[in-house]
Amino acid sequence: MIHGDKGYDTNAVRRQIEGEGAAPNIPPKANRVWRNCFSSVLYRTRNAIERMFNRLKGFRRVAIRYDRNATNFHAAICLVAAVSYWL
Image (tube, rainbow, N blue to C red; front, top):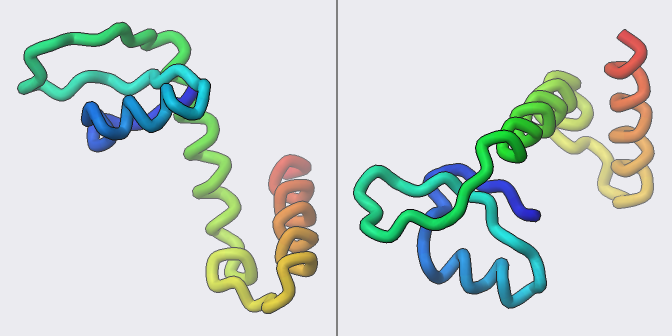
């Protein structure tokens, strides 16, 4: 299941998601003639994911990406996630 906002409600994006073997859960735009299936209950989990990314970006080292090595950057993200979960 792929969650997206109304900006991704195009036929091309939906076909690409379905081509990868996933189901799109994107709310339809107001001007869309054909209303596709959309689950607002499943869409609420997207908010938790966005809040997690905003919390990670609050740490300067992660937001600016001081680490040039991908392994070090991944370690910094894991450390920040553990600290933010702790607090």
